[in-house]
Amino acid sequence: MADLRKWEPLRELANIQKDMDDLFTRFFGGFTPRGLFRREFRGEWYPLVDSYMKDNTFVVRADIPGVDPRDIDISVTGNVLTIKGERKAEVEEKKEGYLFHETTFGSFERSLTLPEGVETAKIHAGYRNGVLEITMPAKAEALPRKVKIEVEEGKKAA
Image (cartoon, rainbow, N blue to C red):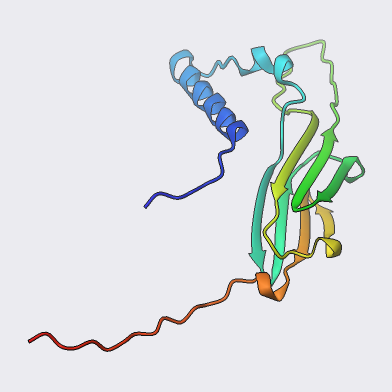
């Protein structure tokens, strides 16, 4: 049986970019066109996010290294959590040699649909070592519960 997953077109686009980079690396010995197109894509990035339940708490972790926590805005509207922010560019100029710059910067926004039963009024956010962690307790009725299967003894075949 196949997994059902939410379609994330931006993630697929990132995977296509990586596949193209790998293809150019194999054919051209390390040169990739990624740097050529970097200016066109500046400001179009988003942090990778994990979300899970742990100890009756819904947890969202976003990898956002290099972002000042003062430049992050977290909001909840209905059952949608939105994380907005900006990674500011540090432009460095070198007169000798080349500058290789892969770090993306600019504004980002991620929205996640929250599971039913989380208490958004009790949201807490912390930032450490480039990782934003947002937690919300889950109401007891929202927690998974185990269902016992009753087995009926059937008649034996003759």
